[in-house]
Each structure stands twice: as C-alpha cells, then as structure tokens.
Length: 187
Image (cartoon, rainbow, N blue to C red; front, side):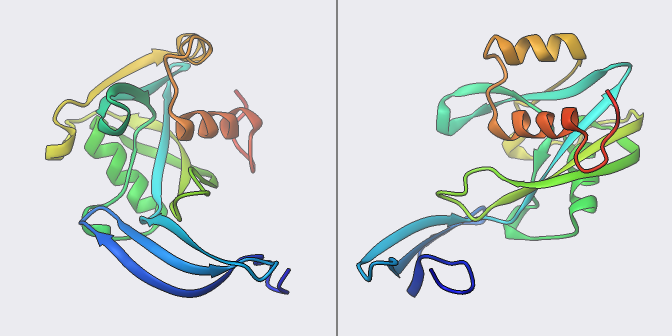
C-alpha cells in the first residue's frame, strides 16, 4: 500500500460524459499487485441533507426518483445546479427553503458522509434544523412533483421499519441524529 493510504494508483483519467448535473470519469488504474484496469465513477458536488424537526416530528419530502422508477420519502436534500458549489451551511439553508418553504433559526452540523463511495465521489453534510419559520417552497422544474409533509417521529420510525423510507442518505442521517454525533441533540 502506498504511504498516502491509496492502494489503487491513478495512471490517467478522462472525462467520458458530462451534463449540468454530473461528470462520468474513466480512470486507467494500477492495483497493488501491479495489474492494470479501468475504474469508472461519477463526480458530483457534495450535497446537503437537512433533518428539520418540530413538535417531536420531522419534515420530509416525497418525489419521484427516476433511476429506481418509484416515489421516495426522504429528508430534504440537494445540490446547486450546474455543478456549482457553496458552503455546506448555505447549501442546507437554500435546499430547506426551496423544497419545504422552511427557514431554520438554528442549524447544527451533524457530520459528513458518503452515499455511494464505490461508484461516486459525492458526499453529503447532514444538518439538524430547528426553530423553524414557515414560508412558500420554491421548487425547481425537476421538483415539480415534490410533496412536503410533516410526520410525527413515531410514524417516521414506523415508515423505516416497514421499508417505506429506503433512501440510504436519509437513513444514515437519521442514525447520526440518534447517535448524537458529534454533539447532536438528545432525542
């Protein structure tokens, strides 16, 4: 293993595809045993995921997720268009406002995770939002079917147990919240 902790060495890289939402890279690599291969992966900017809580419940969104051909209940989450980036906190505030119309008086960072580290470079920052002010959502064209709904905590946990909530990022973020990492709220 290399001293920098990388067991796979990048020999060359090329951009195989790019849209306003992602890049697909194809790298020529060398494995620890010296054999060579190709590793393809998606490059996307990190996103923000927001757990918005009030009255012992959570604000969630439901939207159609084309790759899995079904609707999905999730915590609000997203990135800026055109592969743009900003600070994680500003992104979290903007995504929460756009998707739900909510503004957080208090926004606490719970951690940084990776959602598909075997096929994408994208990670995400998890925020816990409280002291919420209600307003109007400002949905993007791609979000025109998005629904926003508040659920009591017990119902969210039942939806997880029953397989209604299957979004990996939502489930990982909820685990961070329950574990109080790094200094999350006591639930």
